[in-house]
Image (cartoon, rainbow, N blue to C red; front, side):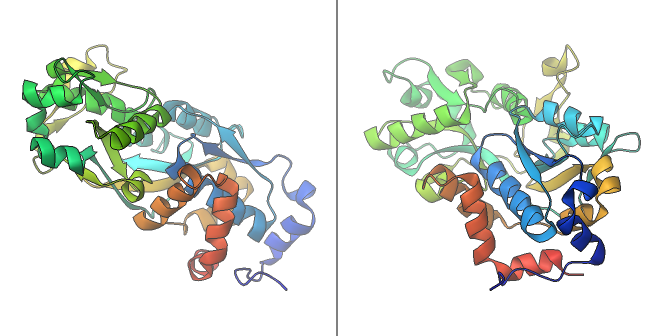
Length: 322
């Protein structure tokens, strides 16, 4: 029996399914940056294109966001699809590569993402840490140190993330940078540190974003910040040698818009793929659950994606419908 999420293919899609060697000389490539939320959306798209259009799709490991965009823009098949475009975080890259002179297309649809700083609810309540400005209190910063006396440790993101540069500015401008070691480790290391802190009842604080599996796994407290204000948000890209001095950020992020991007060469060679990519979007909760299945339950991204697709036939039908 055919899967309930299958739909009738168009004549061109059917041809691609029956004779993929003729329709597609090389596999479609999709970026896998190694973190669970983006893996969830990437592998859902991968399975969707494989199952519904008979496409050969290859996931490509790529941890650096600028590298992903450069590969997209080369239109050489190195990376054809990127499912985790956060705006405003990647605004400069979108303007550079998806603007009038770029070779990347940004899908119109998006879903919401949130960003800020988190600690555990236990730590927040025990030490009365509610706001980012509490982190500039040396005594409260010390809660996050190894010995409870020295500088605290705060995770501001992974190397290669554009948000990590933004967090460097925010730590300075919120006034707590001098009281903390600003850590830029891989997310897996930061999550392991968080897990150890939760089990030991010690302090942990760091950059956090949603959707994310940690909100389902732990009791986290998002620290209060001044509401987003464009007048208090100036960020200069690190390509400028004086970017840090020229940047100034003293308010919270605006809720992000998370889009899919794809190469114009893919749109030209496989318009039926581009048509689907323009319709695919997610909910914040759906991506958190996908990430939880991958990062916490230990499912492979491919298995988690296929299970999610099978459990959400109505959503899939909406993506594939006219």
